[in-house]
Image (cartoon, rainbow, N blue to C red; front, side, top):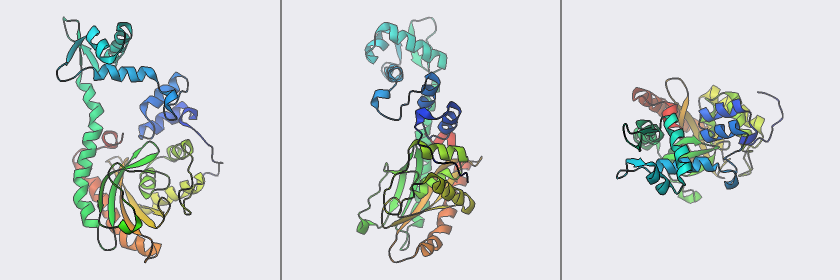
Length: 309
C-alpha cells in the first residue's frame, strides 16, 4: 500500500479526472463532475453550493406528466415556476442532451425515452432485492442473526434488503434505507475491494473517517490495507467498528466484468464467540451467497452501471 500521508479532500478539491473516475463508481454524483468542469463548485457539502440551474432543469422535466405529456413553452414555464426565457434555454439544452424533443410541426415539447434511463437504477435494484431474499433467509440461523444487501451511495452504504432474526438485545434495528459509513462497514469495504486503489483513496479522503466506536479504524492507509486484504480474501470483516458488540462479514456482488454492484453481509453479536469463530461460521455461507447472487444477476443482464446510483 502507498505510504503517502492521508489528505483531507472534499469533492471540490478532487482533480477533474479523479472526480470523473469516482463518479463512474457511484461515489459522487454526475453533477459533481459538471461542477468541477464549471470551476469547482461542490454539491456535496451544503445547500449554499446547490447548482440552481440543475434544480431548474429538473423542474422543467417534472413539468411533464401523464396528463401533460406534450406542453408548449408557456405551459412548461408556468409548471416549473420559471420565466419564459429561462424555460426556453433549459428546454433547448435538454433537447440537445436527448431528454426532451420537439413534437414535429407543432410548438410543443415532450420527454423522450432517454428519461427512462434515469429510472433503470431503481428497477435493477428491485431485481437485486428479489433475487437476494431467499439467499438471505437461508443464511439466518442460530449463529447468524441477520443478513443484508447494501449498495454504495456517495460515501455511505445503503441497506436495500435485510433479513433479521435477532439482535434485539443489542438494540440494533437496521432496516431498508438505513445508512452506514462505507469505511467502517464490512459491506462498504467489500464493495471498495473491487474498485481501483485511487478510487478507494479518493472516497476515504473526500469524507475523512471519524471514530464511531472504540474499535473504529480511521487512518486512511490502514483502511486501504484492510480493503486490500479483503480483495485477497474475497470477503471483508468489521469487528464492532460501526456498532459496539456487532461483527459483520461481507462479500462483494459483481457484474460480468468484475465491477461491484453491491455486497452481501452476515451479522452476529461479538459476545459468546471469538472473531475467528465468527468468521469460520459465516465466511463460506456469505461468500457462496454473494457468488450465487452475482451469477444470477449476470444471467439476468444486471450490471454495475444499471444498479449503482
